[in-house]
Length: 56
Figure 1 (cartoon, rainbow, N blue to C red):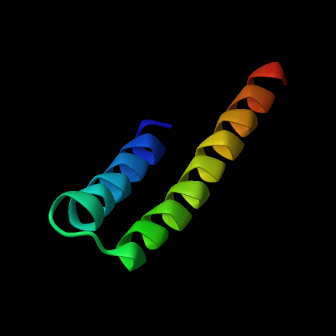
Figure 2: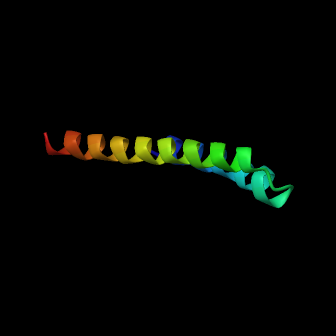
């Protein structure tokens, strides 16, 4: 779980830095949003799978 969260933060940080702070680049912002959606989806699915395995 910690690897998944670290990967999400590691993807989000450069997207914010290069998409907003350094220069406004809509393509980097959109790519960062899409990657964040998939990363969050992965974290949620992983969390649900871990919770399911604990019940059995």
